[in-house]
Length: 556
Image (spheres, rainbow, N blue to C red):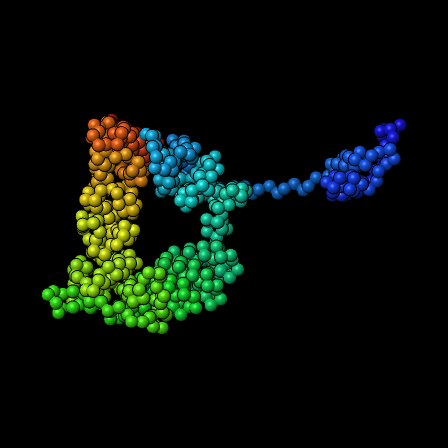
């Protein structure tokens, strides 16, 4: 006995596995197996051949080479988190209720919305992330791009190590300078030159950014060395990096870029040059702009008269003026706006009788040109970060219709506010809220420093209290309430306790609004207390007391 089943041919050639699969798919009636032993039907012969082939495939499989072990995770030299803060991080990362939108949210804090603030504070202390928290931290950053810079800074080098092992976390490599690759020492001229000549775009952009932050002239010289051979889209991105460390020393290179064949590159170069009031470009724009704007003394009082350009000549186009206006804009007003916004703001006091920005903005403008002229001055003030002109164009926060002389939109007012100091910015927004309420304040609050200064915090809380007394539902102000939870000084929690009671509802109030407001204020107070506790948890643990030292309450 040879152990073979009786009546079967043990030497059935099975062909290749692919042939067997093809025969099975087509059916043995349409394609018979290559070898059918006597006494066996075609389907049975096919199954026999497949069984033999399966055994052969399994028995004949050679073990593959062992995969190379991953390199050890890099060390993180930063101090570890205090234990209470580590537990808090776990809680914040486990919460997925944030971003609930504008509906009813209950009285519990949105923990995920506190994570950005917690990360900023942890990074300020210089702590290292707990290794066991890194996967959840990377998952959170994957789902929210706004978390990525702070989350990756906190996660440190081990985040990149993990990202190379998990495709879901590859965003960390893209977000890191050089795509996760280590940049060369900026003092190693040969390594810098080699990466600039041979590296990927992301690596080159990261290198240029580092050089501009440390030694701006070296970054500019590196860019100039290959400028003529770069693609237009790369020239545009590289040129924009010159905003970091921008100075008068960059003017010759930017003047060269004004002659670029790409319109977008020319426009970016012009934008950068307009931020250098002493540049030849700024002087040219000042000449053109002052030819269009003058002081008229022939009427009952001084006024500004405007004569917009009649054409966009070749010189204007070379200096970045776009000749074709967008739909709905007139050509002459379009050209005028570009000239005025690119001229140094210091031009106008000399041109308009030595007046201050406030006095200039207060002058009437003839023939309906005021809106166009003031809007261009707004853009110039934002671009040149001129606090005096920003202050003048904003005007009083209690101005009628919630607008300053030249601020044509809330977004523009927010940009003008950014040029002011934090305290002045907060005071202006507090005055705006006191006069106009919260309905238009959301964008303005977003540019204020955190935590909000006490006058601004009080103005927001008072306005919320007024909205409650008006009988509306609190989710009409959910955006402002969410900002208050993250931006109010935690010290305000005690003052807010008086708002926790359910107030008497006016007759025309929305049903149940008082209870919803009490719930919303309870959430606000709870969140502020939680933020204060989070801050305490991040404080470094107190070191051992020196020998012989007495506790504070025992000292003389």
